[in-house]
Amino acid sequence: MRGSKLSVSDRCVDPRMPSLCEVVHSFFTSMALSRKTVQSRVPVVALVVSEQDRYILSSTSGQEPLDVRFAESCEEACTLANRLTAPIILLDRDWPGIEWRTAVASLAALPHRACVILMSGVADDYLWQELIRTGGYDVLPKPLRPDNVARVVKLALSYWNSAPKPAVPARRT
Image (cartoon, rainbow, N blue to C red):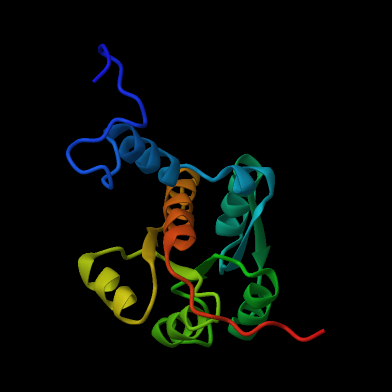
């Protein structure tokens, strides 16, 4: 090493291995929103029952670079998520008329593989395991808090940005 400073070109043992600086930089930049994401708003589709939850999601979207769109049905959420290529879908566990496992499986099967976050007043290991089995990403405990919403959405977005995407056929015009 040259002096006490590490440079990006310093390697541990194998020149093909990333340096400590590269690893640390990669870790911290993967946790933050990318520069592209910060400049544009991230579309988020939400199926929410209560007005209070709508208010919290709307206020969070005012503080974070999120464009929250509310859907009135699971079908509308699928259509909206596909049209916007929304990486995040928020689903209220108490949404009337649908069983949450079926809704999560349908939403998670969208071509762009959105991260489905289940909002629930009950947030235990059993629910989380069931959610993962049906294709969901995480459980967001209710009552919603803006800091929890922002944290879970940022983590989901980071995961979605780094996860491999299936090949999607090109759209015909």
